[in-house]
Length: 138
Image (cartoon, rainbow, N blue to C red; front, top):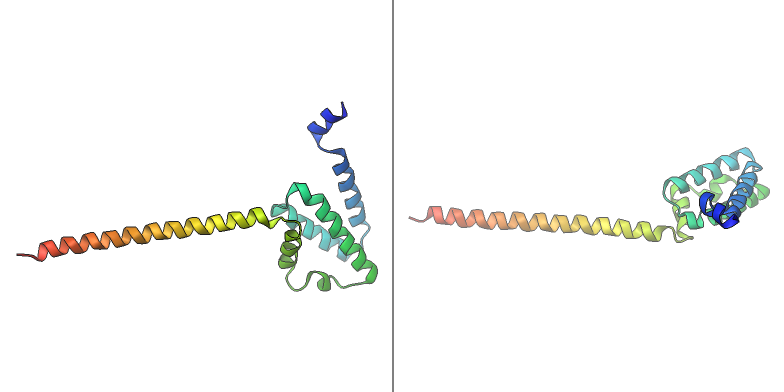
């Protein structure tokens, strides 16, 4: 029966881990909590994989708990570019592999489209030049 319920509502262990993570974040000092909430939101909005999301945020909580205990400034943790910090953090969990493939696929599709367009323009110029040559003959 438990397996059926887990299939319907999700893994109970993951839910317990998520609740524990949220409790840890709630216990952080306000600035650190705000930073973790923002990074978590970014991770969720930019497609951090559900397979590793809980492990990621647990590690994020570890990092910020230690930083808070050591009184490490938030900017020392995330640097000047929080997006770059978070993207690097995601890459440590293999999160950019799928995204990287999609970005490469998009780039290749645009290059292919550009090549098609250039070939079409080249063929049109050749056709127009041939037509002009025929017209200019007596």
